[in-house]
Length: 255
Image (cartoon, rainbow, N blue to C red):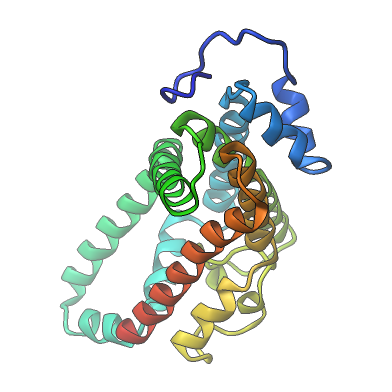
């Protein structure tokens, strides 16, 4: 993949295969990131993995929970202000609202590959600006985008697999939480209705797979930019802390 854009391009020197790059993310991530820095930045395989696992997860949610039930659960967990607003509606209005919410949720699942690409472009642009202008890096957009695709593998592989396992093991449909479906964080072991909204949002952010992914991004960003790892970690975790704080603040406002 060319560093001047997102689309893969012919590569002049032989590097790792995409299968090797994917497997290295779970054993020797530096090899993958070094290969990307050297110009071998095709990213289609991790994207295909995301799409396959995402649709498998959607199929299991639809079968074991139902999109309608999953949407109702999210409304129930959305905060007291939302509950009060819905309580003021007539039964007909609530049903119409529920149909719209279910349709939106369904299309979010269907269009998830598009959202992955959009989020990747935004994340790559932000990280590129941070590492180059903030820490004197020499990264190019294509390398950062490819790095992001590979670094996201633990999150995008382990999370849906665990979510599928939980559902197949017989989790109650009424307790399914689309925003926190895998037992990889502190919040997964707390009741979202009995725990304060801000505390629950904070505990949910303390996610082992997320932190693993962020560490990989820090290593990868530093590698493709040619800077110290500390700069990569600071760039990635700095944005993560900001996002966590915004999430906690939003929970307080909505709660």
